[in-house]
Length: 88
Image 1 (cartoon, one colour):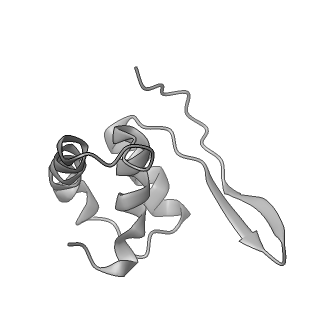
Image 2 (cartoon, one colour):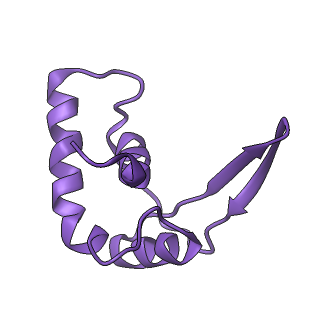
């Protein structure tokens, strides 16, 4: 598996493959394949991923990403995408 500081990959792959809702073997395999497919891009990004890494990943993959933080019982936007990429 991936190191714990690579949670960015887990989160994006889960969103794309929808592993979080229905973790079947086929979806888990697709999840791992997707992370492996992104490996050349992800290896160029510093981990844990900061907003610059998110922007780079968006640019290279055409995936829009919004990142939220949660602190002191408050949800706040950490990074909001300027792109309008859409998944089919």
